[in-house]
Image (cartoon, rainbow, N blue to C red; front, top):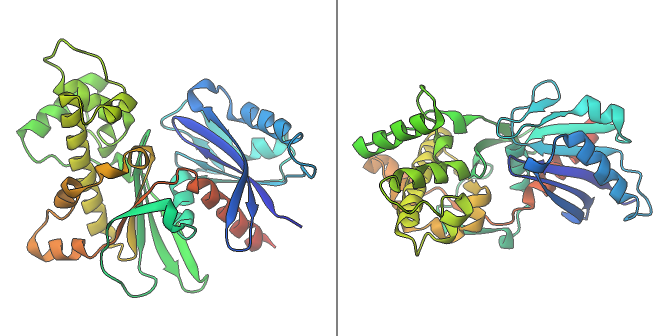
Length: 331
């Protein structure tokens, strides 16, 4: 019997629901719907509509297991999303739909599981690094609507990598000079906050917009402040160019600090929509800042493989893998 799972990648911008089918050595997405998170008032009602749509797509539509990868911390099978006005409750879904088993995981846990499913066409390598001993740690980081991190350690007993979620995107942003302090103060005023700004205040779609406003604050031209527009005009608009260069500098600094924290000798994976849509931006400027440490640690950082995940759907396969492992554990 073909094994299929209902899966979802629920972020601050997009809500992707899919049916993923188990193949011999991989998972295949056989049905998918993309929706804007902003247009949803209830995840549960959107899921019910999705399940209804499946009735006309599959002869055997007895779907009983689902895993939803959600941008937020999971507490007691419940997620209150920090970057969207949505709450997802696994027990409510099991109670009000035909699904018997619902697993909620952090969206970067799904990316962590997905690192073992990556094919060569799913990523680009920006730093080859050095061949490490087998089963060394891996790390995932990604900027999109917010900033996520995940750390993977190989479990000898389970004979696989185990992802560990994090809210490290909300840790304090380190500032290096007066200009960056001015930027931080500008964002504090813009966001009406009194505490230190975090990485996510600059390493996210909104962060791009915040920095554009800072660099453009003395100009009469106010267009092009949406993150997507900034990305599109980063080679033609001087302010977009300055904004994106600063974004890449902060991104590399964040990756460097995370790499020094975790020593991911098996690889640092950069995910998220911004890198996936602009993979060529993770370039020499990024690597120069990433390696910008003392001579001893510069050499160490050069040995870490860095890969940019360009397949935006890979987290759906990661969610399916998480559901499969949960099913096997329960039987």
